[in-house]
Image 1 (cartoon, rainbow, N blue to C red):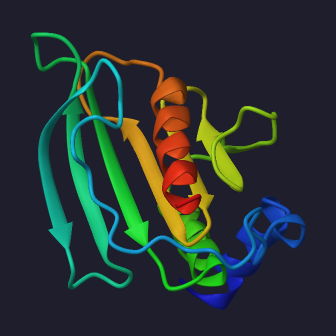
Image 2 (cartoon, rainbow, N blue to C red):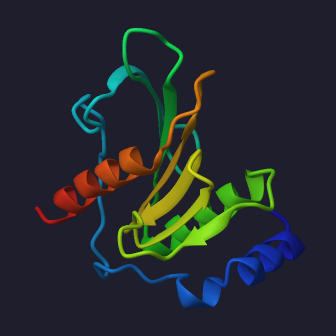
Amino acid sequence: MDAAQKAYLEQRYNAREWYGRGRRGRRSLQGFSFDGSELPGWTLQRIRPDEQAQPPVLRSLWSRGDTMSALLAIDVFQCASVRSAHEQLLEALGNIESDAVERRTAPNAPGDVAFALADTLVLFARANVVVLLRNAGPTVVSVDEAARALDARLVQRLGR
């Protein structure tokens, strides 16, 4: 991302309030993986790690019900630090082609910092991990509950 776009995103999303700060200090997660139980009511269909990407990303696809019409795509970026996670968060915000993305600040918002596009996409950072959760099928479903469930698992892993 070029410097002008980064400056725009930092200003647009008031990065001074959250950049480089996590609620759990310097704690970090390493080796995150899905076992399929992270999202109640959803079934893990496939998982593809991309270790060549910088930062490494774990891409997954989840379905709900018997049909493949309700799908969630979840990308989990495993960054080296909170600061690098926030860099990745800005990068992901820059790749979302909508000015309707807003910061979520409610007490039940996932992560240390979160952004959403209505209830169809959630992007959040928890410690050194960035999660992009979005609809991937023809049936539009709310991603909020799934984002909170996944964040609860991240918090649980950080507490170990």
